[in-house]
Length: 113
Image 1: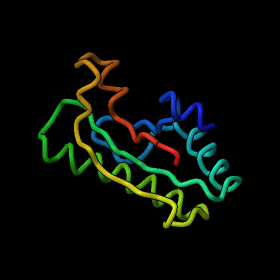
Image 2: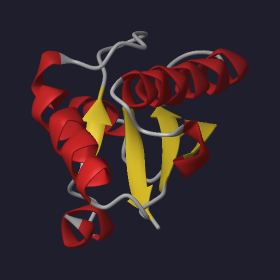
Image 3: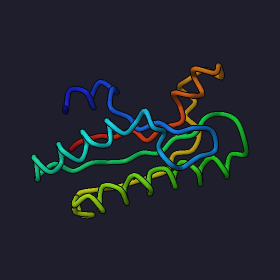
């Protein structure tokens, strides 16, 4: 699991202007919860991102809401809040402005510690 996360393979993705994970991310959320319940010393940093469309401040707020919703899902599943940190980074400019790039940018990245 750590290798998947380190390689950037475990993210939770979102639709445009939405702070609820898309249906394709359900398995990723399940795997994160399962892993954190098994390895109780593991901590996670949840970093929300948005695509390049829209107002900068709105994207910053949206990215934070995305991270907060995932945080709440993990806590409601039994993960201690002390093991979680979150932030909203706003626009992820590492992806191009293509349709695919924007889809990949709308996510919460999980970093395990």
